[in-house]
Image (spheres, rainbow, N blue to C red):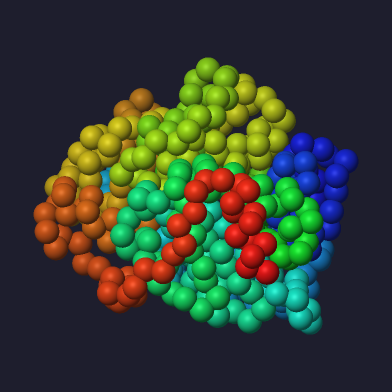
Length: 433
């Protein structure tokens, strides 16, 4: 299959170029020339399939023309080694727990798949691959874990100074080895702009053999569509869900749209955001106006210029009417988010992280006018990753910290502080050659 730029459909590349170069030279994003649909035979038996079997079928639909069947099986089975269980809080109110991977966040699915696919695409090569990633919290930790000490790779993570939780920061800065952390004096949008600037410098990108691990990379999005199908499979047969997605860079919602394209029955999508409500505003008004991200307690969603909006627009043929018929946007304040954390604990004895709390609020608002809806809210990260917020709302020692996170607390942070300046960043990258 070939892949084209959202800015120029005439610019087309093969799978290896799309995945390893990540960003077209025209600053668009890569999309498949044709979007696959799963065979009717799959949908006849999908409720009986395991999570890895679902992943294999989806991966084959997207990449089967270029990657041999056994290689895809190995990639998926090496990725999906933990579950994404559906937890029911009340009638029609479901949470999809996506935090059972090694870094306790949904990004583990995409990062682990991408690392394995890139390893297959570069098999037999002796040139080091530089993985460049901007993070607003969880992406960097998942990528660092997935690529840590993988031969032939080095990872450079950019994160906004003072805008990730302490334990999230340790996941980025305490691994060492082939992982380098850059603490950027700015916002996530600044970090993302620096990453894009490096890819658009084609000479630098070639010399460094750059690839991206952000959701601008299709290898991140496709495996995230696995768990939409897996989630629906856990509902009673015949129940068609409304998915509620806490949203920042909108890769997760785009993956849900890919699952819809594959043939998954979905009633509706809710884009749930914090104060950074650029997409909900677009869905209300038809005006897309990116602006600087503002900090909130749901920090992974503090994105003012979401990259994947252009993919969403492409999937709907650029039609605002078509997009708003499928997606409703909602936004909530920090005060509302804090209250939701307390309410969910009081009502259900369930701990929900600040991002999932934004989603839960949106699910309640949706069902207030659509009472028969079955909502599935994506719980994207373990609440233990946000101890300051959780303890402020639920009390000291209210959240049990999993061992794989607790062991990071005492490790030393190692990061290089840089301004949000493309020239300074380019000079740092050049010096790192």
